[in-house]
Length: 610
Image (spheres, rainbow, N blue to C red):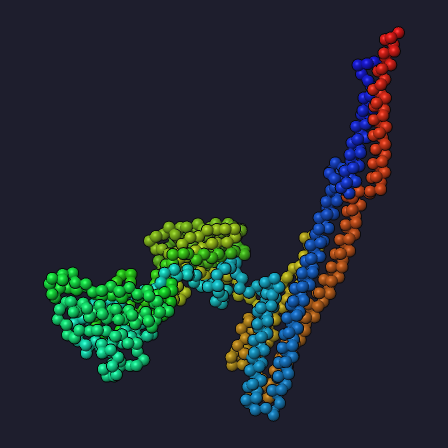
């Protein structure tokens, strides 16, 4: 018998620890409902379970994808249902126009309805969309390798998008009406009846205070400018007074009759005499500075014209340099606040694509490259896009723009305030306001995008790939045909005879008005269009039925795979409860035995007593 080591107690303690660990695992499984809570519980089972979970979650998403595909098909088929109705009405009209009881005017009325129905087919083809995806206008329309988020840039044909981005004006337009002091020496007869035309309104000088013609206004449609005028003045003071009176009267008349344009934003600068002690000295000019109420761009300011019937001594001046005579109001071509927009790249540019920013043309190539250079008329650069992604190409574009910005001698991007790359977008800004010039005439920030193969892809069927399974290759592909009037053989030019074959561009419908014979011939053309639409609807219906079976299969696979994963991962609660009860009893027994084994050394005391 030993007292330093109680081997029985150690044995009981070891078994108690094992039982407590097993009980803890039982409690974890019972409380979580999972047989595998960590890899240590079942490493192989965990790996199998996680693979199954990937499939299960993939099947869930695939089921939603298939439902979305059915929704897309239903949207498309609903649009084609209306196209069918339109075609049936057009056939009805063609049959009606084929009857010789009609006069040319009757057929013309029928033709007008056919034309409108044809344009409606084009509108349906051009606007039917699902999640902003156009369904019946063929390959993605209006999409190049890059897209500008400004409505000022639009499709110009031949794979080209272009436009001028301008900032909103932040300052009003102005003009300076300059009247020389020499005008103050004129007689009343020479002054009376003279006019100032400002913004389409004619202001007529009346020095006789609205007396009937010929002593008053020569044209009763004019606006009277009542002026107190000293006849044939001889002193500088009288000349100054005459001109200043005219300026005051004209200012009052304009503010009263054109308040919407100018309000009270008219500043009067009187004639002054630098040497009042000497008569006949050089007097300054008198001026009215006309300023609009609203902020205006140069384009808007140019619509407000100014003129006068005075042959001399009266001039409208540019408010900036005060030396140039003008015939319209002038506004600044720069705004205080910039206009920002983005060019978002959907894919890397291809060989032959072009991006023009202001007077800088960037050409994309798959074999050559050249840095920014001034060619004599514009800035140019070539970027090699071979093997590059969008982000690498954007970095090259940013560098080219920086180099062009640094060329302060030629200023190829004078309208570009700033540029930056954010993700897959090129963010540009300009402070140039609209001066009314056309594209290519240095107005605002000019943008042009040329997609070299856009026209080659134009008009092709829209190809869609639906992910209807949990794995990479489990897709369903189908196409949506182009269903515009041209593709159905119904689009015509304005003459009703020239056939248009590509694009949503019908100017008129098929001819049913020339004669009964022509109208009869159109019936067969419309029948063919009806057949094409029926074929497309039939294809869509077949795909929808297939997708419904696909969804049923996905649901079944989802259910069975979930059940299989449950058998691996989930706890059998009855069995686990049995194990828990066993381990709980063993815990109590081990605790009792540990207590008994701790009492064994007490027997040694009996030996010591003897």
